[in-house]
Image (cartoon, rainbow, N blue to C red; front, side):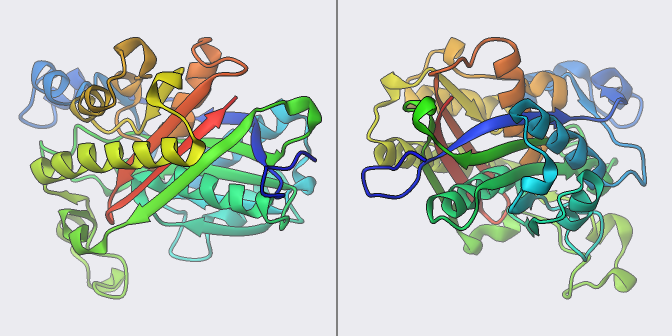
Length: 335
């Protein structure tokens, strides 16, 4: 095991996977459902299509597929997992945690399992606590997952939000670095929250305030968002979180090989890139294919960027997200 300068073990990602539903909903399809157009959606969001899960398919199905891919890439069996973390706001049920269903589906019989509710920052929250568990010696193998089926809580009559969301999952297997790893690993990780602004992006129903039996399905159990306000806070907060991750890693933005931001809106991504002074070729974008998959967007993007050769061994990658809560997270990973 390789130690950091402070004597604690460093952690690294040794396997990744992703899974999305087969069904694709295009902008042309949405034109038939609501008063919108492909041009309007593309100009304001950058989205051309999104993957939509069939009703009744649990998010743990997609999590399990992504998790198994990550394990297979690393050559690690599920029974070796010590901790299984699932970042999601669309779990299989109110309880138990979706993580326990993932445990059962992949055979991770020795893992402690829990969900983290941080909206679009869910994967980076999971990665942060995976890193902490490794560095404090509490675990050897941790699976960090981000998954969402946001289309199950989408108001399809609301043209401002129904065009945004898609479904999917992504997973990363985290373990301690070794001498063969060189300088690869999670160089920094940072998360934060501001609950004072929660009503700018939230879902009111389904909990103890508006219990399921009392809710109005459309009014109470769908995503509510103040788009313009969210945009302003998102760019500013993601920029600040990015700078914090860079500072913690002792790096400058010029040392980054790739930025993988949460795929929420192309205007947010462009605004962040401008503030970071990053050229477009160093900012990974796949929102046109998947829409906003919330907690799943960053791991899905990381898997694609690696497959396309845009992230290679030794690449310095900044991941940064912003979500309802408000929550945010960032990490610098050297692959």
